[in-house]
Image 1 (cartoon, helix red, strand yellow):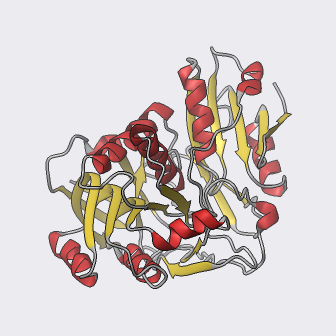
Image 2: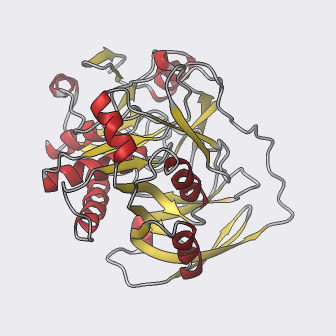
Amino acid sequence: MQIKLKTGNLNIKINETSDWKLKELCDFAARNNPKRGFLFLSKVLGKHYPCTPADILKVHNYLANTLINSNIIINAKTTLFISMAETAIGLGQGIYESFIEKTNSLNNLFIHTTRYFLDNYKFILFEEEHSHAPELFLYYPVQPLLQKQFVEAKYLVLIDDEISTGKTFVNLIQAYIKVNPGLEKVYILSILNFLTEEKQNEIINTFKSLEINFIHCLRASFDFEPNTNYIFESSKITRNIKTDRKSNLLLNSGRLGINEALNYDFSEIFNYLKKDKSILVLGTGEFMHLPFKLALELEKSNYKIKVQSTTRSPILLGNAIQSTLNFTDNYNEGIDNFLYNVSENQYNQILLCYETPTGDGLAYLTKTLNTILNIQFTPEKIVIKQESK
């Protein structure tokens, strides 16, 4: 199949039988990025596209089950799960929570990479070379037990929404084995796997001392024919600012490691909502998983729910992107953020969820979208601010 984008033509071929159809998993869009002018826009992440929590959960469970049914040995050796910022943070945390629920496994650790700098915290730095925001930090856990698991894990589970070249994971594995040379196996999990057999073997042969396994929902191949006449809009590379962001981040949610499911009491939120109204639960930036869990609880109680998140990814209007809002990020870095496929008056009730202090970006979303609840997540509880009815 061929997808025509402003930036060129994307050609896709399904390579193997799958339990999933491509159209169930993704749509397509053009990126304002000359390094990579296309985007596989996931329909099961709740990032750039509004999703039902049940569809997201189905993918979490599928990939967790596939991992469990592989030759991974539960509990015998420490397993480290790492998901990739920004897009796959929620995916990775969901897979991890599904895994520990299904296996009752205790000998494991989840951590997600981040684009935010924390002063005086030890980290591994690596790059996502094709990205508009290439630097990624992987922080060491602070708690002694978690730090021990981090540096002594025998199994490494790497999670992203799609893998096309494998360079980011190669960079991460190379950086990680310097601090943990005793690593034995790597499992690379993705919704979409676009690696050729040659590329997979190249990755496997790069790490001859490791067993590398690939797990996915669907495997395909693609090539992109750039539109040489297209002129990309001016867009700055959003390199991370080396300013401490501790005051802007929820540090108990995964950046510094966690070995249990995240749980908050959402019961008070139900008092503000009506079941006959359409509801959007809107996360912000890297803060995706807890908004998803809130949305899932509401969906289980028969509310009409969609969930998605803001992003710093610059995507062009057209194809799967039907609307766009541009605003200042709420992490106090002065970086452009975006919200796609959400327009004014599309939902009866919008719940804006965030981990940061309030600021101009959140104020813009509150006013533009007429949010009814702004929900700040603190380490101990949620703080609800009612905005309008």
